Amino acid sequence: MNSSVLISNIIRFFALVMAQVLILKNIDFGTYAPYFKVFVYPLFILMLPIRLPTWGAMLVALLVGLTVDMFYDSAGLHAGACVAAAFARPLAFRMFEPRGGYDINQNPNKNDLGAAWFLQYTAVILAVFIITFFIYETFLFKDFGFALIKAILSYLISFPVILVLVYIFNPKY
Amino acid sequence: MSNLIEFLLRYNAFFLFIGLEVFAVYLMVNYNDHHSKVALHSSNVVSGAIMKRYDSMTDYWKLRAVNDSLANQYNQFLNQDTSSYYQHRIKVFSTNDSIYERNYNYLSAKVINNSTDRPNNFITLEKGARHGIQKNSGVLSGGGLAGIVLKTSENYSLVMSLLHRNMRLSAKIKRNNHFGSLIWTGNNPRIMTLDAIPKHARILKGDTIVTSGFSSTFPPDIMIGTVSDFRIEQGSNFYTVDVELNTDLSNIEYVNIVQNLMRDEILELQESAGNE
Image 1: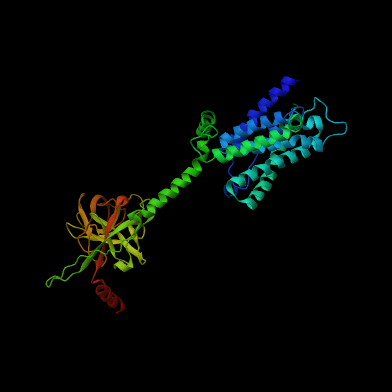
Image 2: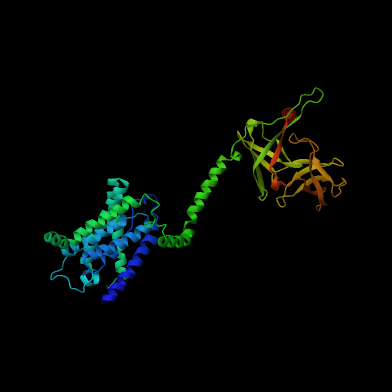
């Protein structure tokens, strides 16, 4: 049980990072390119086991973020957003805690906790991720209202992409 | 002190969060402008190698965009090249002579469009009305004829090529001055047909065909081509002569336009005869 969780998370790490930097990074929205950033790799942070302590989740998130940053040439930008998303995880868990609490062996996916739970949870964490991301991006490039529009549009496009991935692969662990 | 440690442990996640965010911001501030510190950039060994491999795979997908940009660049270069400018120079060489009055003037022009593969071919020249090119002027090329000016605009003129079904030129056999009309049947761009040479005329293969000078379009005795074949069609009183053109109209670059300075006088005279 434990090793299968570990292995599936490692596979997810590489698969999602590769998908992000090799495919999604290269999607060309033409004129609208600055408005649409599609993020799928936050799914990795979303799907880390519930029992993983927050500090562990944050360190792993930092690792994912820095890995993606290497490909985006944006040291720290994705890492900061990832850490924020990981930090928000326990808050989201508490917000949507089912009656009777979480089972020790439950994983944050729609099989164990239901589609409605997963939808709300993803909505919150992804929002934290994208808002942090664009705050940092603005902090770097200084253009705030623009960043808000970008954040909203990117959220609207990343959310369905992540859900589609979850529904296609339907991960158990 | 123990309270502080307890406090830190109790809120470990929050302090780690703050610490990691500070670290991230530190990276953003320090590494994004410094190219010497490449460990976190796509030029480092791992991500650099992956990106390079990936790039070599996806180059193909970018070919359309690359082609577009190359075409644009080429277009830009063409626009800068001298060939894309219009030359206003008008080269006319003329001499004044008290014994010989000038009858023909020649202008040179560059061919900018030409065809030989259609039933009706046209040549476009880079000189027009303002250079003195008039409708119905003859056009010479290299060692022979090219056509007759059909239309002129301000800077360009359209020439009916010899290789046009409506072309009808007065031509004669140089050796014995028998004349006929030269037409193109639309088959071979090197061969035209000389009609209406009377049966009693002596024709030999290789006879030179020249302009007759009967029309005001071309001066007389300009080489057109040589007889390559001749025959008498069934029941006809005239020879049908195949004339191999002296010029290859498929590769002409420059042509000379004939200005007949006395044409108006000739036309006037002929018209007055027609009216009587």
